[in-house]
Image (cartoon, rainbow, N blue to C red; front, side, top):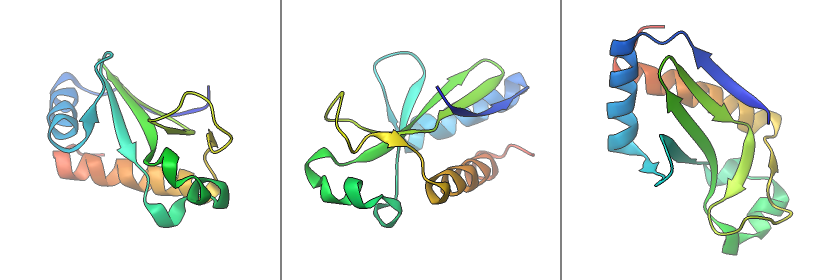
Length: 110
């Protein structure tokens, strides 16, 4: 699985990020997994055509010392569909910028 990983998080930063994620994103019932919806204008043509699969999301997993962001754009409604696929360049850049903004909003210094 391709991922964007931010590691070597200090314990106090882990807690700040967890608090932000808990307050702002949907939490999966499985582990410390969160769903980050992707802005609609960033969806590929296939993803836009699959309104029934919306929302399209990135999965974020917070564990002690690291935040892992899957680079797979998935749908919460189906396990398999041809609208599920790896992030485009635009989606990847958006994700990186969102993670920077998340760290800033959570009060974590880069």
